[in-house]
Structures are given as C-alpha cells and as structure tokens.
Length: 151
Image 1: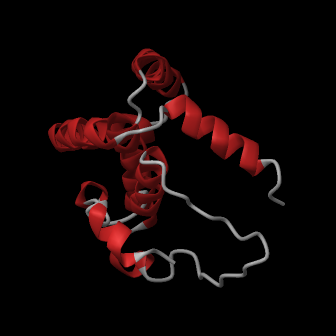
Image 2: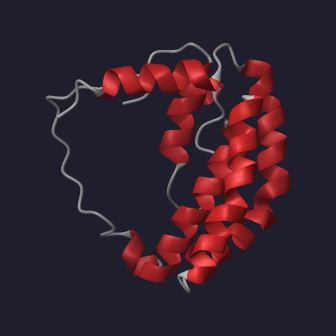
C-alpha cells in the first residue's frame, strides 16, 4: 500500500527501470531518504505468481538482463554517498573481469544496456540530491537493523 499523495510527490514509479524490476525498491528507497516511513508487516501474506505475467511478454534471458541492468541504474541514481559511489565504481571492473574469466556475459550485456540509460539516471541523481535528508549509510544501517527481525 502506498499513500497516493506521497507517491505523487515522489513522481511515482520511475520509467528508468521500464519495463520491470526495481521500480518499487527505488520508490521505497527515495521515500526513506526523505525521512518518510516505510513499513514492513511480517505477518502479512501476499500471493504472487512470480513472473506469471512478464514471462508472457519477455523471455527469461531478457528478464535476467533487465534485472541486472536495473541494478546498475538503481545505484547510479540513488547511492549518493561519495565513498559508496567510489566503491561501486571500483568494483564494476573487478566483477566484469571475474565474469570474463568465468565466460559469463550477463553483467557485461547489462552494463552496456545500463550505459544507454546512464544520462537519465544521472539526471535523476541530481534531483534526488535536492530531496535527500538522510545519507545512504543511515538508510542502509536502518534497513539492516530492521532486517534482523524478519523471518
């Protein structure tokens, strides 16, 4: 559930992640960085048939690539702390080299897919900087503390 007024204040789901994955994570993370509350109800039950709709539109390989692409985009857009940004920049080549030696192409393809959307991610990043009250470290600490109570 989302408060409609706040959802609209955040600009709704970001088309940067279109057609799938990360839009709800992005929305929640931006809300947290503004100091808004995001609740988790461990007793709630949601029935969700994973990929029941999207697999009719996209192939499994395409879904994996889009998910990996959106991981890059999420970080480029939302992780604003300089030290975390630097870590991410330094680790990208290491992970890509690792995958090269493993003869895996997923993150290579996803990286180049993400580069096409990088200007939009960086534009959104500037906007996020204007609205941020809490640092990434503060939010990640809060998320990690609260996650210890989940089952």
